[in-house]
Image (cartoon, rainbow, N blue to C red; front, side, top):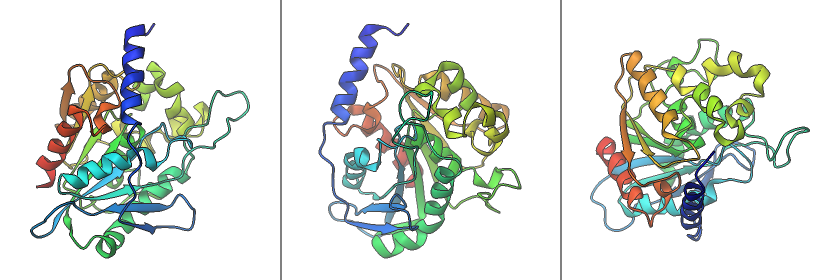
Length: 292
């Protein structure tokens, strides 16, 4: 049973993270015809000398419809104020209404959620070149929070997807690295712990498809990637507990790859994307280490 004090702390952290007003982008561009197939761009704030790294943000929210990119716009603006060019990606999520016999909105769409992330990342060089002339497309870092952390890790692993996968790339994507924030990075462990009410299985189309689709979707199954990867995780996270991140890091080690893991004391799930929290500054530093 979860400690009531931990639940109260998590609620307070969520309130703080969601208290910031949404920040309008400097430009937006569509990468498809669906209304959710859009990327918002944030130019680096202040004076810049030459091109700056591009940070691609993939938002969380358990791949569920009620949670869109708006809640991470203050985080995107924070990164822009640190001197990065930023692309905030939207993608199709689960339905707003629950399916029969389920509780709450369904997590994700198979295969549309993955279709969109792949299409967005493939389109980004052209879109960013037009919208953010300050962006150095040779220095791209992908970051994502929670379910978005999963998508960030997955986007960096498309070259090791099964050969029959429609999302597979013939070569590693041109990324400087990935910074995954409290990611749902190991689906088997996430399901064992009941993370986000079984959202991982829902994303894959339900428990009946879980095992068959795992090799095409689970970051812990897509290793090694050869791409620099760092995970930032709060030790007090009760939404996506640190066991999930540790399982992914351990899977990487077994595959012969080292993944950096930064565990933050006294930090839960939401401070990682809260501009008012010290943890957010740690995230920016992790991104900078890979980007610059």
